[in-house]
Length: 511
Image (cartoon, rainbow, N blue to C red):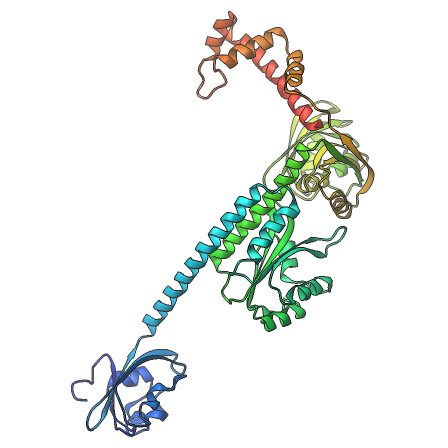
């Protein structure tokens, strides 16, 4: 042992029958003990035990050269051990390789995660391409579930949505080898326990559970079938657009680390894109439909800020226009009769769900105000559920709203949702055909609304690239071509644009 006392590697001299005769200082540090405890002791008793117990087994018969790396639970370290027999003793070298092994494990983990991410990214990209052509909520949900459930990465997947007229989640589609697991999931949804998918729908956020069999938040039947089928993790993905949750996709996997942070972010994106696709499909179907279903709904003062304000101000309010914004925000332009618009704006500003108000037209007892709605209201709900608000009026604390829906929509579901959430009553329901208007009809109708000078000013400015960016002609140049002054040109342009925009948006509101 002379000369090895300060060696950075642990060194032990051991007899052929396993008795330790000498150790250096590094050995005592690695094993967290002292020289007196080790020297003259039996190697199989004092040296830490690994699961395989490879080192003691090298001394059971004739000792031969050996080299191995093992994990030792006692000191919670990885040791690289080399056994070098000599004529009169056996020298054992011990090196702590824990840091390297942990780096290697982290590298392997990251490499495996990158491989999974590459596969997942390709899968998600393919799903997103397919979502572009989907035209119904059912088709979109079927696409997502089928592609996830039939891949080797996951055991199975399913899609659920709220039951008509209630809060229970109902399974609409599933894919993958469930081995009876779907039956247990279905049973748990019918019971009183709240599972991860239901919580994801309540919060609108992706929810991870792992391990499934040990999480008390998972209903007991699902935990039992997860244990029996080797299901270790599940991810619940809400299909979200703004504040509206259209449904949830549950994905189950047999790997304990099937959903890393990056993978969860990809699935969250998938859920938002799918939610956007559902919303877009609903509006597209409504725009392209030859017929519409019109619902007339009535609701009391607690059905949002507008009926409450009509009662507080003793005014009649009407919806003149509506602009949808991001995150389920609505910009509403409201006509006022019977009260000062400034009073109505101030009262509305104090109502929950109103972000801001602004007076547009101020009269003594009539005018109009701008209102930004951000909270729960029938107007927001109808727009988020795929409808178009054709009209709305409010008086004496009561509201009435006409909503147009595509015949392909689940009209009953939308009607029941608004009725349940806002104590509304369905006053009427009717099917209405849309009139077919040709492009020439539109041009003729718009042209009839313009005066000769307005039409001349707009036409000249258009062909002179006045409306381009950057402009091809200035207002002065266009005015000079018409032999009028620039202020006169701008007056005719504004008047003409006002008529065109009024015609378009009034027609758009009706259709």
